[in-house]
Image 1 (cartoon, rainbow, N blue to C red):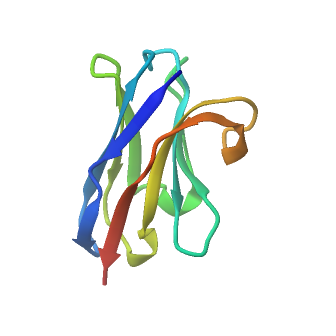
Image 2 (cartoon, rainbow, N blue to C red; image 1 turned 60 degrees about the vertical axis):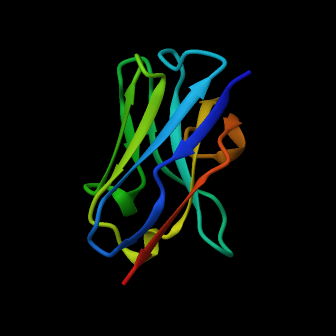
Length: 123
């Protein structure tokens, strides 16, 4: 069983940066594919970024390319999402997820989820 706990969210202004953290317990993440999703009010949860443990490949949704970066620190068993040039439309609850079975982009394929951290970007 994997437990994921996100942190680092908050209220910022447009153009600011935040770094979200996802700390894992129950197993090591160095052999786990990881991802970040987000869910805005009234909208479905959507894929933001993913990272494969084998080879370190990263994947991003088009709307965050060039602004967000996913990374991991295996020694700390933590995955990060660095978010730069934030926009009001980035406002959402951000969740990390682990171990997809199948498509990386489908939330239904993930076995483990964190409770989420709120990011609010004011204009």
